[in-house]
Length: 168
Image (cartoon, rainbow, N blue to C red; front, side):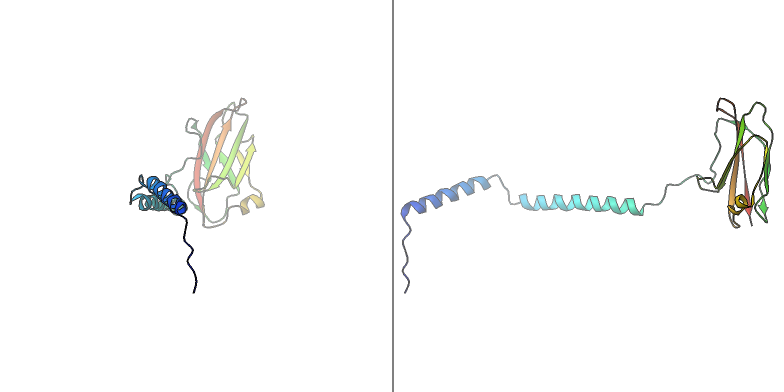
């Protein structure tokens, strides 16, 4: 049979002092303290996850169906060909009215609804003949926007024009 060793009296007092200190430290804690901390953590995590899901799945911003590819402050430049309509093949030539005092023209062709030109040329005459490689950049089934900007010697825009066409 085992023998129980009596605990000295001063150990009981130390244990009681320790328990009193524990009780005093917990007096400021309510029974709702831990559940509130857990609830706050759950709300924060849910907000972060919700923000990430929204950012990943949000639809792209709505843009106007009619995008202008030319500076709004420029005076109009009349485009001559191609001018609207549907073409059987990509155009061989782009032409526009001549602008007095211009240094150069900048011709750009875009797939409608995009912001990066598929063709860009800087020329001094009011028309451009396309190479076979340039025509190959305009496959069938797309609508294209083409712009021409007349630039002055100081780099300012004198006038600009834009038109669309579709390659069947």
